[in-house]
Image (cartoon, rainbow, N blue to C red; front, side):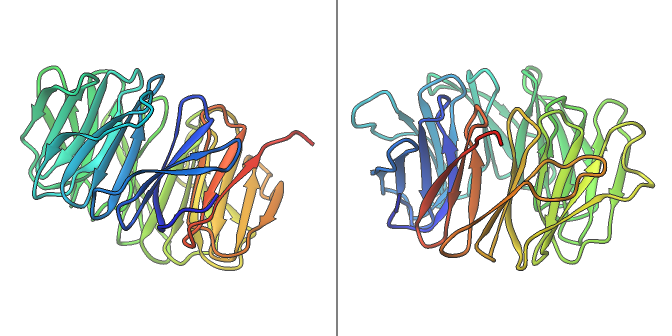
Length: 329
C-alpha cells in the first residue's frame, strides 16, 4: 500500500485485518492488510503523535500536535472524530487498558483517564515533572515517566509514588508480567525498576541515546538499540537476571536500526533498518543468527506485528506500507 504522508504511528485492529497509519503531516489512513488498499480516514490535525486501537473493540484513539485526543468508532461506515480532550500541551503515552474499558494519556503533569464511552473518569495529579511516557500495569495502576522521574499511579485512589530515573527517558517499556519497567535514557543507559521490591539497576555501554526498547511476550528478554547503532542488544532476565552478565548482540544490519518489535505472543523479534533490511530473529541462549532477511526498496521506518503474530507491517518514510506473512519453514 502507499499513503501520501510519512508514517509516525501504527495500530492494528484486534482481528489483524486492518492497519491504521498516522502521518507526520496529520493524515490517518486505514489500510487493508489483506488487499493493500488504503483509505484516508482523517486529515484534521497538524501532525499525528500516536494511535491506539481499543483491545477487543472498535474504537481508535489518536493524539496529535494540536494537543487533541480524538476517538473514532471504526464500526461506522464513515467514522467521524470525537474530541475527548484538547490542551496546549502535547498528549503523551496514549494507552488503552488491556480490557479496552479505559484510555489513559499524560497531559503536562497530569494523567487523564477516560472510559470507553468517552467520559472522563479520573485526573491524577501530583507528578513533579511533565510526563513524556505512560503505560498500564494491570487494571488499577499506571506507570508514567518524565525528565528524571518514574511514577507509579493508582487509578482508584489517585495516589502517586515517585522514583528517581537518573536521566531523560526516551522509552518506557513494561513486561507483560508487570515486574520491571525499563526506560532507555538519553545518556546511553537503560534504567530498570523492579516494581515489586522497588529495586533499581542500570545497564550502560550504549553509543548514543537508547531510543528503542521492547519486552518479549514472556517478559524474559528486553531488546534495545541506541541511536545510530547497527546492532540490537538483548538482555536476558531469566534466572538471576542480566546484572553481571553479557547481553546478546544481534548483528545483521549494515546501517542503523530504525525499529524493533516482538510478537505479542511468540518468541520472534523483528528489526528494521536504514539499510533497507527487515530481519527476523529468535533470540535465546546460543541463538544470535537471523532466521530471515527481507530487502525493501528503501529505508524502513516503523514496524508492528498483528495481534495474532502472523503478519508483520513495515512502514517506510516514503509512504510505502508493506505486509509480510509469517510461515513455518
